[in-house]
Length: 114
Image 1 (tube, rainbow, N blue to C red):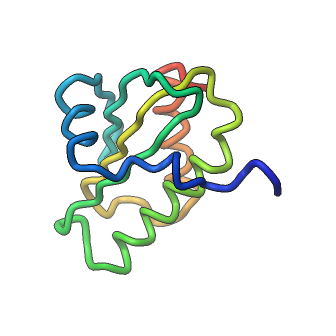
Image 2: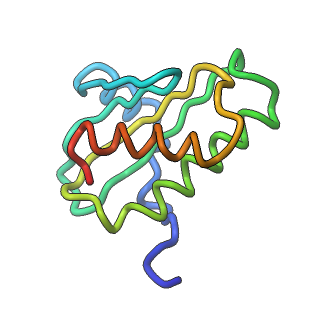
């Protein structure tokens, strides 16, 4: 569908940008997922993803990255304001996409993005 792709400009890639969000942003947490976020001067939201090695093997870490990108991609049109968001997943806790999506959207609503 047009307009629902995850564009290159919507990625947070630079280490300095991650550090800036960690130090100057706010945080919310649910279970083993933590959001670091701060308002952005862009007119679109950006996403950064961190999944540490202790979360699981490469297959599990990449699954969480895909799930996060998919949820962000599908819900970015509902974002109220532009925000730089870093999502960190700490443990392999979710068995399926549905429960992961539920926790992710709960945090979106908690920080008043949707």
